[in-house]
Amino acid sequence: MTGRELRLSRVFPEGGSAVVVAMDHGQTFGPMEGLIDFTKAAEQLKEADAVLMTAQMIRFSGSLYQNRNSPAVIVRTNWNTIHCEPWEYQESNIVQSLSVESAVAMGADIVLASLVLQTGSEAHDAENVSVFAKCVEETYRLGIPMIGEVFPVGGLRAHPDEFHDYIKKMCRIVCELGADAIKTFYTGERFAEVTDGVPIPVFALGAEKFENEVDALQLAQKAVAGGARGVVFGRNVVQAKNPAQFLRGLKDVVQGREDPAGAAAKYGLK
Image (cartoon, rainbow, N blue to C red; front, top):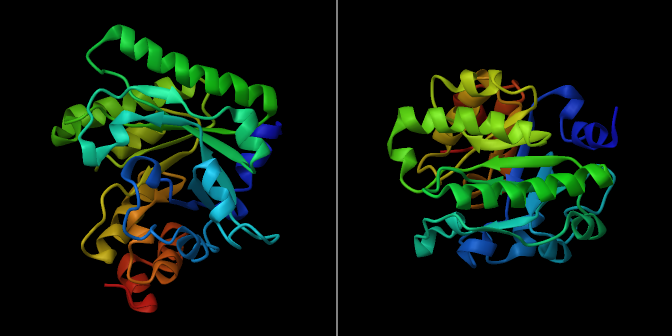
């Protein structure tokens, strides 16, 4: 195994599917519900297989990473205007916010960078690829795995067929640019076309907060059935009534020990 493969393999419990929790929203949302007390939020996530955050917030993660069986540390290395949902940015201008070397020095086991294309400008798309490719090149030099985050341009999610086609093509593009794994949206019944199109693990993200926790568990189950090697859930975990209990239920569903209804009953989820 290469160093990249070895480090990425540690995310997957005994070769099974992984549950990653994202708590990097503050860099584009500000002090969001569930993450206002960052240390308290982090310390409820010790049973996650990995946790995604910005490198600068590792210092506020309390005891999250302070034992042998702690989650893997995933660090975001670029900043994307499309994530600034409160300000309704649409252009997806991407900059590298942190070198991979600095991320590793600050504790990263794995890094993540996003890529958005079809921005309406070929020059803009090419610049976004350049930023992503530069990050990937740094990871190869350091032996650190790269998760490529495939994100759509504004408004595309309102058109299911076009959205699915975009995600399917983009996942292959990100793979061919050197990503070791992918974080992206679940696209529905045809999601297996996405996962079949790449020879690397795909993680389905949870996106918006579901009103009912069992609905979030159902999305996770469908994604894994469609070939996802796990999920990356943020708001649905950190904004849950009891994040630690929801995380346990999510792990049971993703790792095949319970169906959504059974997990909800077992952990008192709504």
